[in-house]
Amino acid sequence: MTLLVQDPLLSKAAEKSQDALDSLQKWFKDKHLDISAGKSTVTIFTADTKEFKYDPGLKWEGTVIPMQNRTRLLGVELDTMLRMTGHVEQVSARLAKANNILRALAGAKWGSSKETMLRTFKAIIKPLATYAGPAWHQLMSETQKTKLERQYVGGLKACCGLTKDTPNNWSTTKRGCYR
Image 1 (tube, rainbow, N blue to C red):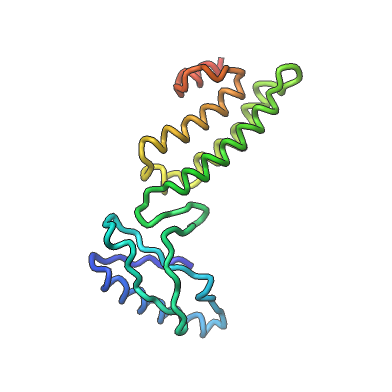
Image 2 (cartoon, rainbow, N blue to C red):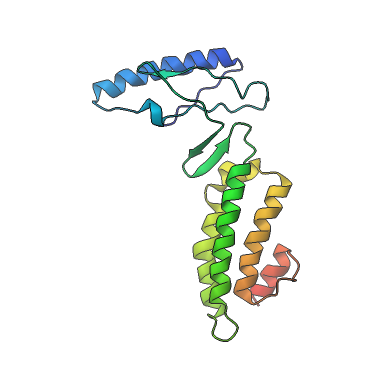
């Protein structure tokens, strides 16, 4: 369950959140459902560095819900300042592993055909790089975008038999791949 409450004042947002939790608690009890407060977390998203350590002390059935600086929502790791650092690191590491698979498939003496490699690229790398993209791509810094683009283009180079020293230019790589 995700509960999103916003207010310019943190104290007001905390009050609204607790009221919402109290209402949800009653609804869950009526439906004979239960949520574990120990497995739940509270994360505050803010651009103010003074506010992100604020603990609203929200409670579920008398148990305080712990604060966390990061949370995962539908597979996307969100941090308090919405800098996307943790998520970009995770996606980059997964892309690197996927690129290793592509390089293994592209053996010089026995490697797969370019068409097979491109299908594999589209099945493995593209979903990793673009999953929930509208939610987090716009929040990335230029450095983070470059890091992911380097991994993405690296996979495409492996598919197309381009060398590692081919410039990391998306249009150049794409042209070389679809000849």
